[in-house]
Image (tube, rainbow, N blue to C red; front, side, top):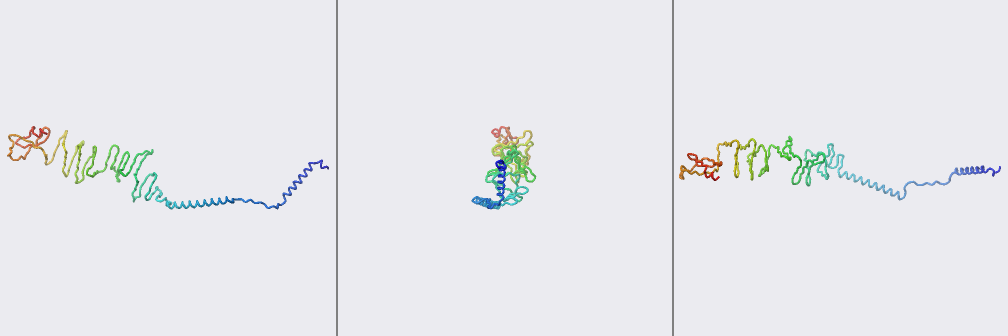
Length: 313
């Protein structure tokens, strides 16, 4: 057979031989050594990594030391910190405590055997507010005065809760059984005073005085002035009026004396002469204007409406 007549068979035979040759070459053992590539960080990168790890370790050690130092200085314990103790009932502070910012609490009380002291370099102010935040009461303790701003101020007794003192816009009420005012000036009232009883201390004098104006005592059922173991003295600079519009003025005593009454002159033919003994009996006379004077007593009345006492009064 001619090769030129079947070119496809010749080409197929050459392809098969190339495939077998290539297969035989791949199946032969390789005598060359394999190449290995290293895996990891080397060189300056490795040194930088070690430096950062060392820096992190030093930072952790410093932070741990600072934490231990703070715990030691602040006296941290399981119950609290320093003088601060956290209990089931709240927070307990022992010793002197200072607050630089506002403190919001519901109740503050001291130990049973020690007082509660609130101290400030300027003043101590206690505020009370309603649910809307509006100021309803304020108590300020300062260096010069103690001020309370509220609708009603009350001072109560510790035992039964009796109101000893209360003040509001309309009135001031003193509920104590005894009001004691000490000092030489006594008590000064600018307006009227309403009270059921005024009494001085034992062995002390009671004095009601108005230096520049009048002293008026009024009561719908009368005013009773009683001195059980002493004298009753009423003194004025000008005039003393005892007036009863619908009743009478009753003076009941063993002896009634009217001192410093003027003595009127009595001129009559029956009048005692200068050689007569000294006059010791006088008659009490009343002028038409109500003024009293003394007149020498005689056989009859010696009172005269035209007496010099009545004319010059």
